[in-house]
Length: 285
Image 1 (cartoon, one colour):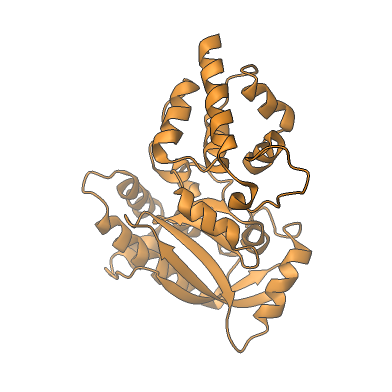
Image 2: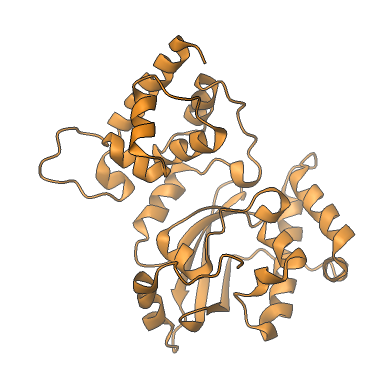
């Protein structure tokens, strides 16, 4: 990157940081705050970067930011799609296609996610790729954003990785299989005929999973707008929860959150998630 590009990138980051109030992203405004927008250390925290690294970026120095870091900054700064693309151009990185884990999360969905502080919630795509999770969701089901390639999709992991089923009681696996496949068929049909992401996922699963092929041949179709399911947590045991979805206008993304099922002890267990955290969620799940 040229020095001019570094300077433009730094100026753009500062301008976006200055316009966001702490309360807009779930942070508490302290009484001694000297800036109207976010501080540099707060942006670094939201993006998962070190404070020193982010300071270098805003000084127009340091190394060229990676695509992963740019995506994290775009989400931390609540950038629109055009602003996200501009950020990538300034950093001389290819603008990511909106597929898989690289999908741009709408700022409105991020804002809603940040406000759901007392219930597990995450934003996923229609192909069940997790884009971002709040801390309680990580504590409940583990970090699902760490996967890449085909395994970024829970549907793919469900049929190719036995560990992916560890969060569900064995007697519920057949029902989960039917629901995932029916939802995938609905999502694939809703996408543009030229779309390759869904087609590639389906072709791969047909080739490697007889179980998927059998379920796919049933031609069941149903969007998962809401669901009631049982989840197995390594410390808290079985939790029965309602899974609710808020779907984006184009149907490509969903804000998914979990609430305790009425008549169960899951409300108490969900409250304990804040204490247990994600330390005991197996990294294989």
